[in-house]
Each structure stands twice: as C-alpha cells, then as structure tokens.
Length: 330
Image (cartoon, rainbow, N blue to C red; front, side, top):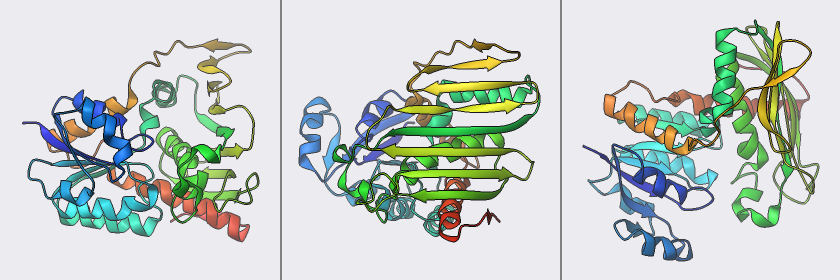
C-alpha cells in the first residue's frame, strides 16, 4: 500500500515535490499546505486530484497521510517536524534540519519517542558528480585521500530571495543555505569524524543585511584528512562551485558553474570522465526514503543524526569566527 504524502510549503523548491511524489512508486500525494493563495492558484487548476489547505496542521490530522515533506522556511523546520512526528507522521525535511543543534536534539527525541523517522534531504549527495567522487575515494584507485577543498561562489541577489532568508535568526544566512551543502558533501565523502574547525564568517559583501554572506573554513579529521570550505555571495560576479580532491596517486577536479565536468589526473594531464548528469536527484532521494520506510529500516538512507552533525560543524564555524580560535568537536 502506498504512503499518503503531504507537502508543506510550495516556495523555492516545494512546488517541485508535487511531481516528485507523483512519480514515486509507493507514494501518493494527498494534500499540499500553503497559506499564500497566490502560490497555489495555478497548482489547483493543474492538480485537481490534490487537496490544498492553508494551515499545515490540517494535514497532520488526516489519517490518509503517513509522510510529510517539509519545505518550509528554515526557522519553521523545528516546530513543524515535531508536530508531524507527534501526530504519527514520518518526515522528509529539506535542509537545514533546523537552526541549532539544540533544536535538532528536540526533533530527534520526538521522532524516537513516537517511533517515526526524520530525514534531512541533503540532495547533493545524489548528484551524479558527487556519487562518482565517493566511488573514487572508496575504491582507493588514486591511493589515499590527503586533502581537498569545496567551494561555492555566486551573486547573492537579495532582491530575488524571500525576506526571511535575509535574517540570521530566521534564515541563518548563506551558511545555512550553501555551507550546509558543502559540509554535507565533505562528511559523506571523507567521513563523519571531523576533529576540529577553524575560520571566519561574516557579511563582508552586504554589511547592511543581517545575515552572513561569506565564509572560509579549515576542517581537520581524526583520520588526518584535511579540507577547506570557501563560500561567498558577492554583489556581482560569476557563479562557480565545485571541489578539488588530492590523493597520494592523483587528483579529482569537479566543477559546476563556469565549467561543468569531472576530471581525474593520474599524471600531468586531466582526463574528463563522462557523467550522465540528467538524473533527477530529488526523485532518487525521495524514492530511497519511501523504500526505506516500506522495508522497515532502522534508519533513513541519509542517517537521521546526519542533519544534526552538519549543524554541529556549521555552529563550530560560527564559534571559531567569534573566538578567533580552532573549535574542537566532541
């Protein structure tokens, strides 16, 4: 029997989940919650088989809903997830998991108390480029990983962003938007055993906005691996993102922006590796989640604790910026 699904929010990415759910075997979209009528006028015409409500609490009262997809503004993740698991629903939640580690702990405690799952959708690990890098690292075909860097530089375009996103206490700044992606990627690729974090964070480009736009961070792993994170949302410039991974016997270079592709160097030349980048990562990720629920797995495909771990590292970057010191993680 298919899991009945409710989608909370139709903002920057929420509307896409309507089609994602409809394409997922084992899931059936029942209801969408969105308080802004202008956001759903056209959706109501296109999806006549779906109910639309203004208050997400109405979706939690329905017996035909077993899974909730949360695509709400960052500051609402915490309470909505707790409300959902307390009403007996599993939760598939867009990143970041919440705004603080303390909020994550409350969400996880509520999920466990109710025997329900919360998975934070760190979708970039489903990108074909990133999966290939994971394969290369694990295979040791280039020897042992030694050091790397992950970066994302782009215009902020504040006029195009929701108002809540430009406030540190509601959106969390670009650390919560972009840096969480980069932290997730490095944890997945290099392991969860991050020992320490150092670096700076600030709103260097937009001092008039109460949210960070820039960060440079240095991460050390207990295994001895090291990596840097460079992120910047400037006033004007070209978007460029990717990473470089250096091994004892070669390197991997990935770019998405000014260039697009993945290259391996075993000698003095970079060899481009063909990657089919057309796969729908959102659909792949949500399908994995539904299949895990159907099997009765003890954890979600992206472990429930992972969203908390990402925020633990992010909070360490902010603490390092405040204190000017390296932060040792527990």
